[in-house]
Image (cartoon, rainbow, N blue to C red; front, top):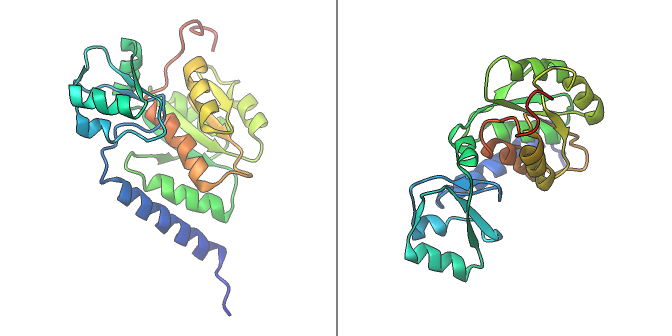
Length: 223
């Protein structure tokens, strides 16, 4: 009996993830992370049906018109509507530019890398460690980067020595959301050990879908 190599396993996992992504395209992609903001002018029934089934809230822009059918559907699903501030809408309308840097090497990480780089939204590979990631972020406005490393605390400390970099370590999607909201995160540092490809991708896309990183009110001039 032949035994598959690490590269073959990684390629197989990547292909499965691509198939799953292609399957999802049949539904409108109007929401992923619960921190997403629906910023279009009209929320119709078809769009409402595309929201994740486990969501409890849909955040909409000021002035968004919700059709009666869409409103009734969301109510039946137990999903409430919340109007957000215009500053949050602007965050979503500026999609930002996104990078990926990897210091940790394994078959799982290789499969994750392929899956993320194959995503609909573009990702740029950045060579080097925390210092290189910080320099890439500061080289142009509206940049954010995901860094995978086995030494997250060290990477966060090194990156935060660079003015303008707001780095934080996160272990799940909720902690990514909090870092975006309260820090204006622009460098997400993750230790991949013990995390699935699916979780790593969910965390990365939650970071990206929040839009271009922006400094949080009250932190201006301090980071």
